[in-house]
Amino acid sequence: MSDILNLQSPASLGPSTFPGSDRPMVEAHGVRKTFGSLEVLSGIDMTVSRGEVACILGPSGSGKSTFLRCINHLEKLSAGRILVDGELIGYREKNGRLHEMKKPQLALQRREIGMVFQRFNLFPHLTVLGNIIQAPMLIRGEKREGAVRRAHALLDMVDLRQKADAYPQQLSGGQQQRVAIARALAMNPKLMLFDEPTSALDPELVGEVLAVMKRLANEGMTMIVVTHEMGFAREVADRVIFMDGGVVVEEGPPAEVLDRPRHERTRTFLRRVR
Image (cartoon, rainbow, N blue to C red):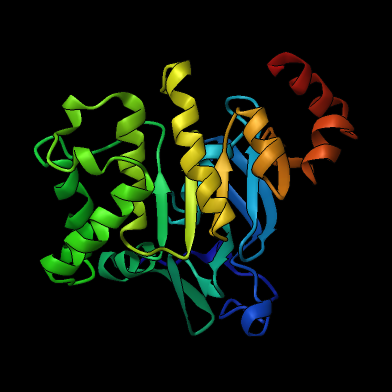
């Protein structure tokens, strides 16, 4: 394990100090990420409550997707710390130093965090059903009968029960993305991350994916969504966060940030995307 010396802070690096149900689902403290000499994240502080839908907006290169990938440790932090449900993600503390977790430990953490990417990332050699049941069986050790039963229920939720035996290449882009959402939900995650899930879709297919996401939000799923879909952010988000240059420029209720932004940089961005 490698020591991550600059991740330490004066605050406790152990479990969150918030008690029980008062504990946020996500806590980010001073998160920085560099690629060589390029600093992509420049000290992100963010808290997402249980059941909250937070939509992150911003121009390309602002650090939105990188931050999302840091939450489940697909990107290693350069500094700071992230906790999910009070648990430090990607590292453990020993003798006042942080050590990166080994892959089996990381896998245990990641199974609690579902992620849907811009591209669908389905396994082309597996059917829709096979894609959904694979992780619960391999990682959670579920028996096939139970995994299949839950997969069919999830396919009902995304309105794709009839496609259970189809292969990804036989589906439209919107259908593939809905399968990707069902696959992530099959692990029964406590948090869902969406990285511009509609950006690779034709415009007429966007609505079917957003409808599934709206249903998840209505059912109380904690969600962090990187998106350019302003209508979705306005309708579904509890909070909108605008990022630029690796920092949070401003955040607040959708009506406040989208209609009455305080910062000129936010106003300029919104004029360009509307």
